[in-house]
Image (cartoon, rainbow over all chains, first blue to last red; front, side):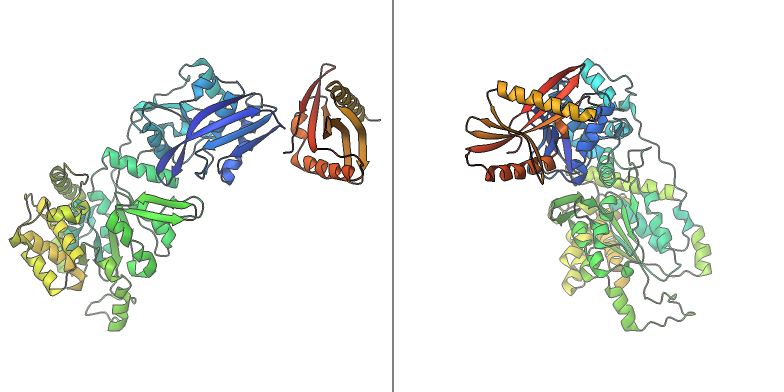
Length: 510
Length: 118
């Protein structure tokens, strides 16, 4: 009759928290009691663990077993505690040495035959375990590649309970450690999309380039068939690969959402998320009653959130974007608690000028009255419009314009080189700060460390005086002018850069 | 009579002997009412002990101990109250014990769990 202790990890959003799992095999009527605020899937661990142990030919203690998860007040969810519970019971029953199980972290769901099944959220869990220092993490073999992405952690991939017990008893390496450390970051295939597909929209292409270089938000406005969607879909082709720490952040979010492809566990390309306009507020910002899952804004973290037909989204859903757009993260509050997900994304909106969606051309007839058009545009609330850095009208181009533009159209690769160069410039300038793109610079730094000259600020301040620009709008224009200067290889934006940024800001309304 | 009934009767006899040896006085055996049966009622000093005896010939259908489910214990409680109401004597406390017997190679292992209902 003894007590054994081991460790596991609980996830709150994408933040990991260490959990101690204690098992006590003691006198009393035979049965297993699981305490420490388990949810339904965790309560069912009792039956899974029992079957797994019996079918792996380990004796199930014929006594009162109490399993406790600490801290007791934190609600715990999910099936990944199975392995830690099984190991703690085996330790308490004396089947494995108790001192060998005390320090490693055990993660994984048990099958009834004792096989270890993969679970969601391995990457953030292992990241959390890594924070404790010299950590050893036992994970299901099918999750090993994902766990191995975390540096400075010893990952032990395990196929089933028997293999684990043998490892714990012998103290040697598990026989089939297929070197998870050497898990290579997969080479991303070149996309078939290319910016050169979009002819006749030089201004919009330029806006897209600025957007990609600085991480700004963009509103594409224009009649149907002019290439708004085409342009937005090509934004990812202009973006450089994610840096390793950002890639881990993005992968952790996708791991929690359970949308990580098992073959290539690391997300190295900036994500592109395009929810349909019937999406609910919870789908966009994250939600769920018991398990709070990340929404589209978090899945688009360090990437692009594209809202096609933006005015068709319910207004309150669009306004949910206001908080993440400003702060770069989103707080989801539910009865179970408040969860913060990172959500720093580029917002691309595409909107038709009116609901009838007739091309607003001389030849075609738009039957919408001015008030209808105004109402349609009004669905994008003022505060949301205020957070869009660039607003571009995508007009229908004539045949001649199309032909003329064909000579100037550039491939994605060419533009991506310029974008990368501008991003490197910005990153170098922001080297001593936690930010990497111009869009992330907070207002205090914008008006302190990165202050523009009086002359350069002149076009903007006059707009502020006349009331066509808010204080937040001014900050956004300044950020965009930094990006324009970066693209032009200039050290500091001049008057022409701020003027250009201002023109892009005023865009649709002007 | 079926073999399982023989086994159960034999187990109950062993349990009664065991309890007597442990210093308890057997008050009644196989007390029945409309709602069920109490295997053994015993006096342990000033306490009343309600004993459920479980005997198994092998572990192929689970252990004897784990076959006592919470529903059974709840029934024992009501039965104990029913038995007590007809008694002139009083007890300081009432306790429910489980005695699990398992047969291995002609011999029996015995486990006695005291106070299973808190």
